[in-house]
Length: 378
Image 1 (spheres, one colour):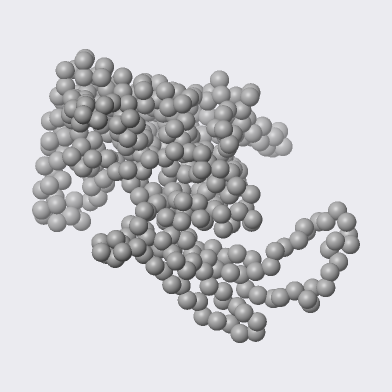
Image 2: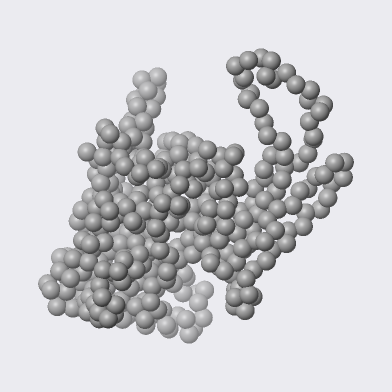
């Protein structure tokens, strides 16, 4: 039992060494390097591992279904990417977007028709960033012409267009996703990836003007009063993608001391002179998470906030939404039950699926996958 525990700890440490990146420059560990796998094998299944568990099927059934429907196997192209990196680093280290452009152009030459793009989860941000990168790569007058010639349609599957609240949880607490590691270790690993900031909730319109209120002052307990202010545009639209208090935390009213001071005298002080008070409650909007206001507020209490702030300042992350004329459909509705849709919505959904099935026989398909891409280790 002891040997098994030591073996597991050794395997976890080795795995973490290969997975984690330097949070400041996004480089690999000197003794281990991980890179995305290539081809359909990178997206169909994940190999078994001591840490990751048995063989798991990801997009295997989807690819199999496409082939059974009549899509040629060589017409399905996977475009794996290192999901740990920021978009700027994807291009700087791997020339990912440069190679992606070549992939689109090669597909058109081989098939004689534009491509259907399927983007899943974080892959939607990758594709949308590619569209923005393309604007700087191609002359403005040729940009729309290139899109029309190379991309027939873009289908967003499980797209976090406004970010994901789960990313906040992973950043603050950690999420093991069933792996045999602690939440603290998962958080340390997750926060070493610059891409973690790419999934945070964001909004350019609404923010909190008064973010906090003290619940305790002297002997009297006061009621909390949260006063939020949104820009005029937010009031006109009467819609907000995220509430203004998306994150609520408590900050200690008195800074603590070292639980085990090296000098005993340091801990000897008059406890009666300390003010007894409840923590200060703070609320933050999606905008204040995206612009770093939240991480600045907790920087003194959380060492990871310094690294996250550095990544926010150094990373260039474009969040513009792709051109509406390009987005001709969304498969997000396919995850809903038909009975939950109105008759008109059902008809629209079925029409889109029929058009998709017909188009899949004519066009080459490129897959972008979000969170589950195989990483090969060297």
